[in-house]
Image (cartoon, rainbow, N blue to C red; front, side, top):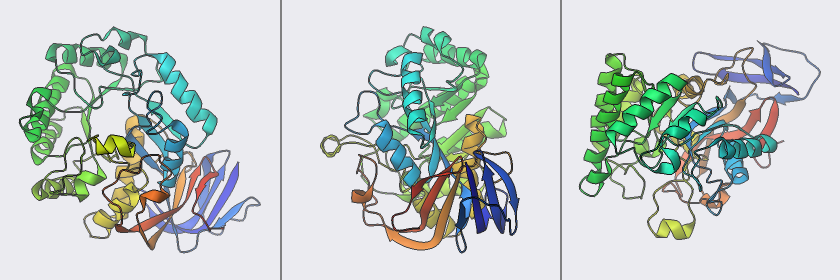
Length: 397
């Protein structure tokens, strides 16, 4: 598969220049000016060419909850949002605690051919909170384990799981929430468990990724740990850095303006490793019954560009690092950079194009969003995976 993109403004975490990119056999082959190659060509004059996005926190609900989302609808939503790599959570039905489910998901993803994926496995077997014997039977394909949607409450079990994960070369991804405190104060529930999970990581030497950090206290704990050179990475979500004082149902909850300001400042100072969507599609009925979550993979880039870059908090290079380069490095995939030898996974963006978010246009089955009717900038026009156009904005030739 050959593709030549010409006359683009090329931006990644470290570069910003005008030029051409040639992709051959799915890999970026040549970068230059006025390249003359006989193959399919895109004239990208006036547009920005960036590495495609990589999402460390996604729910595609398959197997078991395909009324909310399935692999095909999730993948189509991903490429519409500019993503060609997703890290899928294990809270399926049955929970992803064995290689049979991992293989089922990865084969379906590969057959569809729209995105690449990593499938997380559970920390405890079938989320029982006690048994970690299944971890020894996981293949090398599983790089991350997570009890997503909750935390491992028993400290002894979590320490043993981290020790085993360290020995197996796997990352533990933490949803930090002390459930016994959730009905009392969700802020305290997150803060206590963030501190605990960091302490366990430092004790065991296990690499830990803290999901959807939402409070300023939790972020301070992470900063302190990073200053101690702890093996900790963290993510924030678009909704936790855009919304405040909002009662839209998500877990962790939308926080206060002071928390948003602190998280944005932490992004500016380089303490945050990634922006992840926590894409959590639900049916209308489930959402009406109080299900927590946002269908966010199709709106993330535009929201972050509008709220972070256009408002002067960070550069477009920095946004590319947070949404492409750093997540790629955490997943150990060769994406996230417009550099020869890297995967030919790119997006074409019109930064000047303003549009209105309408959930009726989502490819995701989940239409649950608090951003209905928001005007945002930064429209993704094309998503390219391995040199193949896997999404093209309607009407664009």
